[in-house]
Image 1 (cartoon, rainbow over the protein chains, first blue to last red):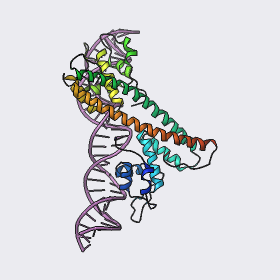
Image 2 (image 1 turned 90 degrees about the vertical axis):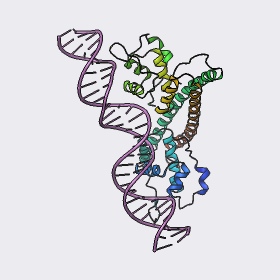
Image 3 (image 1 turned 30 degrees about the horizontal axis):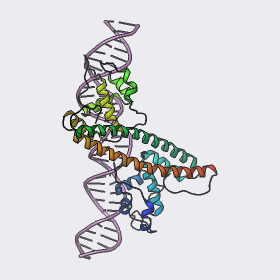
Image 4 (image 1 turned 180 degrees about the vertical axis):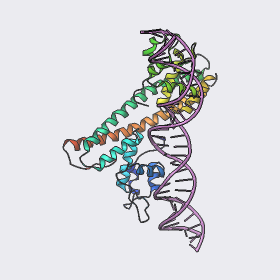
Length: 148
Length: 148
DNA sequence: CTGCGACCTCCAGTGCGCTGGAGGTCAAAT
DNA sequence: ATTTGACCTCCAGCGCACTGGAGGTCGCAG
């Protein structure tokens, strides 16, 4: 949601040793803050608290990162924390696949609706831009209405 | 941003008498709360405070509603209040068309980027859904990874 | 002429998603 | 041996966009 975040695990894959990466590196991979990662853990969005090394520092292994990539995808398509927590809770128990599926399908519908609305708005914005380009090119022909 | 809001002025057009509509009707037209409308006014997002009738109740005329439709479009595509305020301030002064245009163009780029990211995420979500449908259909074949 | 509902102002509170600061541990680098 | 920097926990604070409540006015219906 900040414009710079992209989720690409395959690319980064090789750089993840089997003993895992520290939180700073994980944050860097996802383009988010370390505090956000800890926050997600506190909020129960991970399947389990991230595993720790000798001096209880977090070490994220590939499976942890994969899960986080998934939750960020939900997050960045607008799913609220609370619902992601529900997803995590379901994912801890076997036999909840149908519920998880339904949650995802609902979310999918929501995202599509949002995207369609955005597309419509974008077209209107394009019209406004075109109108302004007119005005700016040979200035002072007509007045346009509506915000913008 | 609540899923139910749609902006359609043309449709509703006929029902707006020249003396304007009260805030409740305006809120209904846009599918937002009356408080939100007052809030936008307080925050300086309108060109001017909405004109009042005899007993200083707000009466929104067509031009007021058109502006609000525009600002809601910006809002619903994620433009923050502060930037919409800037747009409103510019729109009060003539000769600021170039700045308004630039603001809109920047916003357009931002919206497009967001939409492209969403589209990518959506595709991933679709894959997840497909995987879950498999599992749910003939249950217990394989485990999928990633949140969801 | 009394009630009712929609409206008014002013100011405080809420929900969400982080984000910051204090105070401390640990492992490697000088 | 000390310093540095990334990490830790705990708890408080922040920014944004509303949202709610108190206390009051207005105009019409009964």
